[in-house]
Structure formats: structure tokens, C-alpha cells
Image 1: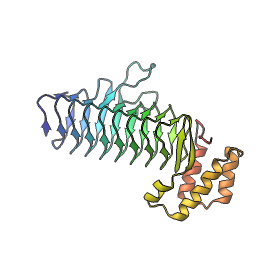
Image 2 (image 1 turned 120 degrees about the vertical axis):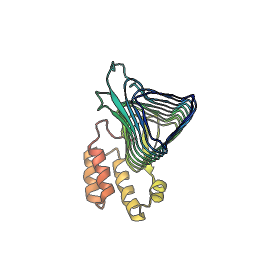
Image 3 (image 1 turned 180 degrees about the horizontal axis):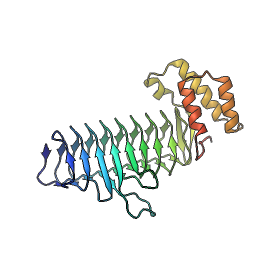
Image 4 (image 1 turned 120 degrees about the horizontal axis):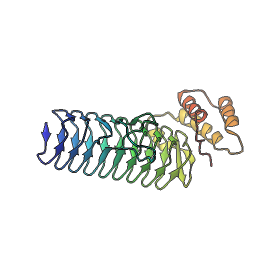
Length: 261
């Protein structure tokens, strides 16, 4: 174990012998750090309000704050969690809050997630695998980001909004409704503009699948159709496969409503 002598580490913390904690880091309360995770200088982990669990092979850069209490006026006390998976990078000055008891009690970050400088992940957010949050991205509480999503710099997402898998939210966009999977969205307020063809091609999605998804997305973006009518037309006009099934489930399960223009 490599813990710099200037670091302040709680007796309640559990740190792998193969982890590294840098100068002037502060670790408060119950914090679990897995093997080969590097905590750079001036990082703050944990608080008296809950547990922070950090997996293996993570890189947490200077000035990041992980495990502060929820930014919620209704929060008075409690003991909740922040859980971070493996092979993630958390950039300088990023902040990730604990969950809230009313929101399920857990803020969760998956594996291979890149959270860049000064980004914020609010209480009860659920971040899937292989997600990129670019510099200064701001996620309010209860946001769900599915796998392989990329969010451009200085973008913001309001509470309870979902971003579907393989979607791309452009730099400077503000999202207050669910963003369809597989789409590129932009604007204030953000709406999908087109299929994320480049992202899907890079992910190995076949040309036929991309055409099928493009047809479905175009149907959903026709505001002359109700959501129910669009789903019926997709069932009739598009070939059934796992991605179309995910798209239609996402739309059917939307509580905030999907952004359609």
C-alpha cells in the first residue's frame, strides 16, 4: 500500500494494499478502495453521511470530491452510498454525491467511465458502462445515463431525465426530457436531430441494423404522430431486433416524456 504521509485517512477506511493515495488527500468515514486504484493529491473521499465504494483500476485526479451528501434541501440526515466500478477515470475537480434515501439510496457509476474535469454527478444518478462525461457536464439528481453515452462539454441534464444508450448529447445542450437511444441531440432544450451513425458504426453495429434504427428514429421524430402511433408504425415498418426492442421499451417507459422536437 502506498499512502503519502500527508494524507489524512479515516480508521474506518478499507484500502487495498495495491492502491495508491497521494499527498494531502482526505478520506473520511467508511471508504473502500480497490486494488490498483490511484487517488491523486488533494482528493476528498467520503463523509459522515454515507459509504463510498470504489472498485479496481480507477484513476481519481487532483481535487475531485466523491461522497459528499446529496444537494437536496429535503435531505437532513441518513446513511447512503456512492458506488464506483472498475477502470474509471475521474478528472480534476469532479464532484459525485451520495444517493438520497428517498431516491433509492445509491449513486452508481459503472465500468470504464470517463468523467472529465469539473463535471458533477448528482445524488441518485445511475451511470452505465463506457460513458463519457466531458468537461463541466452537470447532471442533476436521479439522472439515468445508459451505456455508451457521450455528453459534450458544458451540457446539463435536469432531474429524472434518462439518456438512452449510444446517444450523444452535444456540447452546451440542456436536456429536460428523455433523449432517445442511438440519437444525436442538441439545443436548449435538447431534441434529437439524427441517428448517431458514427457512434453505432464504431461500436460494430451493422449497416442493416443502422438503417433499421434510422427508420425507427425518423418515425419517432415525426411530431405529426402521437407517441403511441409512432410505436405502432415502428412495429409495422421496422424489422424486430434487440435494438428496436430497447428503443421501444425506452419510449414506453418514459415518465418525463421523450424529446421529439
